[in-house]
Length: 221
Image (cartoon, rainbow, N blue to C red; front, side):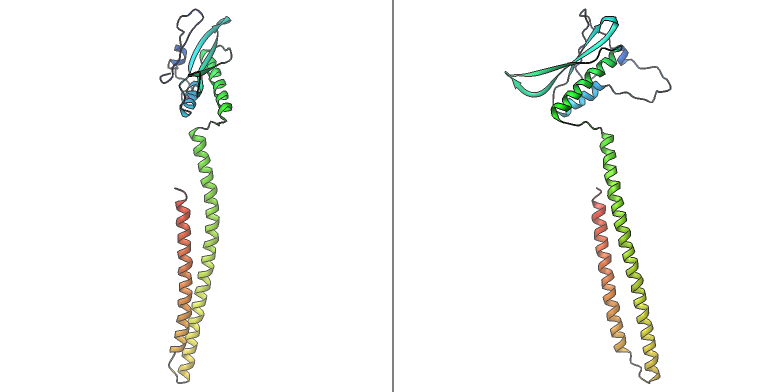
């Protein structure tokens, strides 16, 4: 492991081999599967907590089985002027990789309990963010649908309102013409004032809807 200080010590004091852990595996049907050792995950946890990297010690047990002990600093508080290390051992297992994972899992569990922290990877955080955005988007779409229906209803009544005034002007003009009175100035003035008021109302509703839409859009970024 490049970025971790790993010491491997065997019973007889000779350096242990980690070739089985570092060798490139032969291609097989699961070649696309990438397994990340828990030691790397623990290293990221220590880095996030601004603590020194851990050291791993390998012991060969009877029967050729493996046991790994991980030593790490769990706190930057000094005791008699020095940092106090903690050591935890994993289970006795057949392979070195599994034994190292076991020790790292114990260390991760210890740190999670000590710091009351939950580990979450990027994908989990990203998915939760997307879920929140989808929930927000659904609420926004429901509210937008209600507003659109309201605008549609308003426009429908506005068209009917203008149509009725148009018919009223036409009827009044015809009646005045038959009576020899061609002036429709008063009727037109009243009708145009009503239409102008309705237009301003529609403009206000459209402006408020645009502001609300912009605020909702900005909340996603």
